[in-house]
Image (cartoon, rainbow, N blue to C red):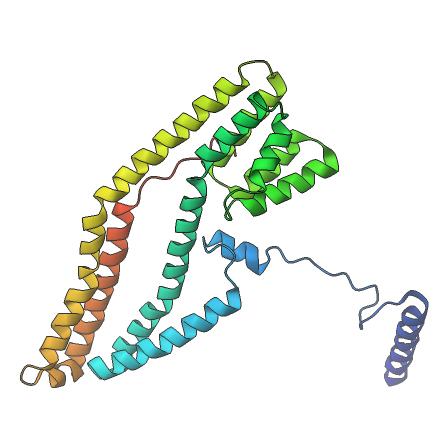
Length: 291
C-alpha cells in the first residue's frame, strides 16, 4: 500500500513538472488554474451601498478610528463596557452616513444640471445643425463632474459601435437615475424619428425637469426646520446624561447593572428615533420606468 502511494505521488509529481514545462500550468491542481472573476468589485459594492467611488479601505479605517473614539467616550461617560460598545458601534456608522449624504448631494447637484444640458443639446441641434448623438456627447463631455464619467463611457461605446441606442443604454446604466432614463429615451426617440419636432420635444423635456426640480427644492426647504429638530434626538439625551452625572450619586447609579441596562435601552431608542425621523423626512424617489 505504501509503495502504491509513493508511486502515485511520483507519477503526479512528474505530471506537474511536465505540464508546467510544456503548457505553463501553475499550482498543485491537475489542470490549468482557472481564475474566477469576483462577482462584485469593491467599487461596485460601494456603489450598491450608495457611497459612490469612496475607497473601501479608507472607509473601514475611518470606521475603526471613530469606533475606538466612541468606545473611549462611552467608557468615560457611563463607566460600563456594554454601553461603551454600543456607542462605539453607533459611532462606527457615522462615516457611512456622512459618505452617503455627500454622495447624494453630489448626485442631486449633478442632476440639477440636466435642464441646462437638454437646452444646450436643443440649441446645437436646431440652430447649429448638429446631429443628436454629436450634440449629446459634445455637451455631456463638458457637463457636471458627476455626469461626465458616464458620458465618457457612453461616448466610448459610440466610437466603437456607432449605435446610439447602445450608447444611451450605457449612459443609463452608469447613471442609474430616472431623469437620465427619461432624457436618454427622449433623445433616442428624437434621433430615430427626426423631423422638425425635435426642438419642441427637447424644450418640453427641459421644462418638465425644471418643474420637477423646483418642486423638490421647495419640499426640501420646508423641511429645514424639521431636519434641525432631528438633531435634538441626539443632543438632548446626551445632555441629560451629562447632567445626571453631576447630580448627587449619578455616576454610581450609571455603574449599577440596572443603570447599565437602562443606558443600553436608551441608546437603542435614540438610534431608532434618529433613523425613523430620517425615514419619514425622506423625499420619495422617482421610480425608474425606462431602466
